[in-house]
Structures are given as structure tokens and as C-alpha cells.
Amino acid sequence: MKEQRSFNPFVELFETSTFPHARTLRTSLWQKFVDAFYVISGFTNTRKHHGLLDYATLFIPRVFSGILKSMGSIKTDSVAAIPALVLVLIHKTVIKPLRALTAGLLVFLASPVILLTHLVSRFVDSSRVAFC
Image (cartoon, rainbow, N blue to C red):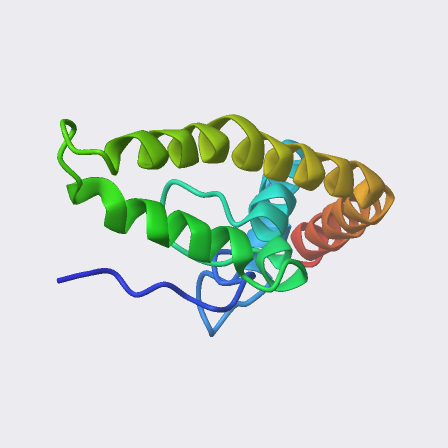
């Protein structure tokens, strides 16, 4: 069965509907930066989802990637293999690194918000432990 792609870029941040902020309270600062990168870029190893960059670029890179995946059945000795190889090289050497660089820059620009979120979560977590 094929895994469904989620249109919610924040799908990995909410682990349960009962405790939606549990991940924010228990993760480290580094994990918050990684989560922000995944939300912006859509790159992840665990679950397929679209990132905020997909919405900003009107899903053009995702459509391009889907076309390349569908071209995977082209035989290597055919004439169509050369344009397919050029498209794959452009995708792997230009589009993906540019997407990762853009997401990294946006995470850097969002770092004050991420730091503030981390400080608030540490304060809430420490106050929760003090009252228990």
C-alpha cells in the first residue's frame, strides 16, 4: 500500500491529539531547529509531507520530482535516456541543494523565534516539575 503524502507541513510536530505541545516541551534546542528545517523544506526521513517551500513555489519542484520518478522506467539505451539524465542531474545538483540552502536560510532567520520558543518551553517544563 502506498503511503499517503500529507498536505500539512506541521504533521510531524503534533505527535498526539491529546497532548499537541508534548514535542515542544520535551525536545532539545537542536531538535527544534531540525523540526523547523523539516517544516520549511519538506525533507524528512520518517514521513512524506509537503513543506512550506512547496506552497511558496506552487508545488513546481514536487511536480518536477514526480515527473522524474515516472521517467525511471526509461530504458538506458533509448534516445529519451539522455534528456532524462540531464533532468535528473539538474534536479540533484541544482534544485535540491538550492531548496536545502533556502530552508537553512529561513531557519536561520527564524532562529530568534525558535530560541524564544525553547526558553518558554523550558520555563513551562521547569514550573510543571516544581508543582508536581
